[in-house]
Length: 229
Length: 253
Ligand code: HEM
Ligand code: SF4
Ligand code: FES
Image (cartoon, rainbow over the protein chains, first blue to last red):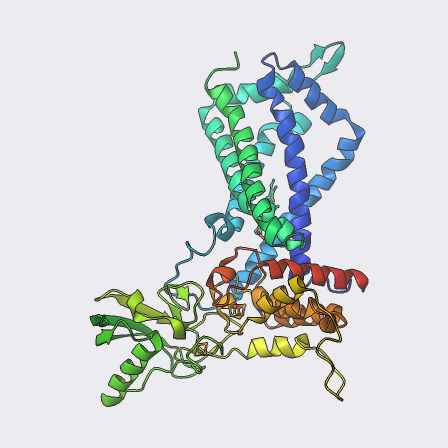
């Protein structure tokens, strides 16, 4: 496996594996978050959040997830920088819209926007839950188990700020766009694609991206429309 | 039906004295071009005009002028080989342009394809990739029997599709990442699909990818632009095969 990581294809394979890992995380994350709108009392979501916060397996996965993000971002940055450098003199006139999708041409920008959103998102919740604390998190008792009221923190943010609601909707849309290309591109990069599977994967990518984007957007929308009370 | 005549065209062409000079766009007017003439014939007419005015003609690459040699290039109005799909520049006709149009003509822009003069670039980088592994080693001797090694029809067809690559360079020229993956994939695929090529498949995939990277081509992000612009419609399914071949080869190391 010598110089696998310095080769273009090697880097792409690691990028796609990290991307697929992040996709797996997204599925779990979305499923859990949808509890926010399934149960207005917040109990289900609080139980879910408490389970995630205390489960030993999740404790192990959390740093791996962080590493997954870091690998994905570092490789994406290296690849993008190298690609910029590969064409020192740019074209004067370029018509790419008929050749390839907008998302495929703007993966780094879309990823960057997702990253900015991610920082805001971590600061909103993760940081407060883990370190800073927040009065809304005051301990509650669900079926005899004491836990933080994560539901109050999340619903509090969305109920109090329409700006944050829009920001979270935007985050969902950027992520969805990233995945319209990223999902099938990941399979292509590891070589799991051919003429027949390409059509299927491209179609699946659109469906998956839509589910992820719609799923994450629906949550702030739900609170914005006042459906939570 | 007689061909229509385009009364006037404005050509915005990249001019560059040699590899070291800076280069820039020059604008030329050209008149009375038949829509039946090919794009390169139109440039021939421009060059005759320039010669008669005692100016340096525009240098551009061409050879067979029937879409088989891969010598012609040109980035025309923002697209490799011009506005038509699945054709080389020599197969492009002036009927694709409107009277009074301004046509921008640029050389392939790719760090690994430096401009030699005007619209001509040095595509030697593709030759170097081929030299690194785009061949099969055979012993000299008697001609082997054509049917001695049976090859399944689907594999033969796919290999043939990949073998249609003419090495024109449009893939790297059009790619936003200047990636040569479609070319390399076509060459690796064409041989990896056949029994004669399988023997050296692992070594070939590694050597050709290493050479491609060394020459400064970018990294593929599967945009698929290459496949749209490839005059021979080489599919990026071959890129998936190259990725597979490369991964297999590296896992064996
Ligand atoms: C939850 C967040 C994210 C997910 C699920 C995700 C997923 C993916 C997937 C599956 C791919 C395809 C990999 C491949 O083809 O090799 C990909 C590619 C890429 N990602 Fe992400 N990504 C995320 C965040 C980011 C971030 C934060 C950045 C940048 C700062 C980024 C930048 C890129 C770039 C530049 C590509 C390469 C384009 C391509 O090869 O198709 N991504 N991403
Ligand atoms: S793959 Fe297509 S575009 Fe690339 S060099 Fe071959 S014929 Fe030209
Ligand atoms: S001149 Fe031979 S392909 Fe165009």
